[in-house]
Length: 196
Ligand code: GTP
Ligand code: MG
View (tube, rainbow, N blue to C red):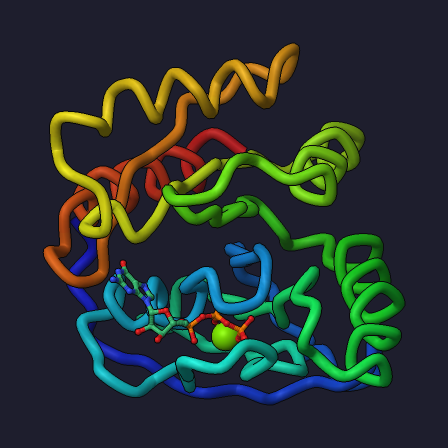
């Protein structure tokens, strides 16, 4: 597991022009609003408030870049798909995120985060399909597993695999509350950085 020695906030980017120019491998965190992207970043980094989190959706509206150990970059993306998020905010998501995926040559890993209590939605499935055309490694992380009893985790994992068929990805189970899965996701990140 990566030992976190240094976390430096780079920029909160609202447009492509503001994306930082770095020549280091990047890992992006993407998913529906309120699913727990920013919380996952904080848990991975062992920090409480590196990435801003909130119980109300639409908290992250720009792309926040963090430099880790002077070695790689984390990009916290704004969430999508939440009905209560204002239309103005929703309209900005697509162009910002599309320009991000099309311009980040250093992007090595994309982690799609989903909620264990929900089935895979069309927008999540479509993102997975779209990711296929890029060179980065895609990881599928199922978070908030503390909300479901342990006995149901394995079945839930199989359900997710069925729902994303024919895409083949092994869901990584995670909880920011119990820290379950933290080691596993770090291993997958490190593997992804080595092989891509
Ligand atoms: P946006 O920035 O709005 O897209 O949301 P986000 O995906 O960054 O979610 P965020 O990390 O702000 O978390 C949303 C809510 O979910 C917060 O109230 C978190 O405390 C809660 N949460 C995140 N991860 C977990 C988890 O593993 N278990 C539980 N029980 N709650 C979690
Ligand atoms: Mg967020």
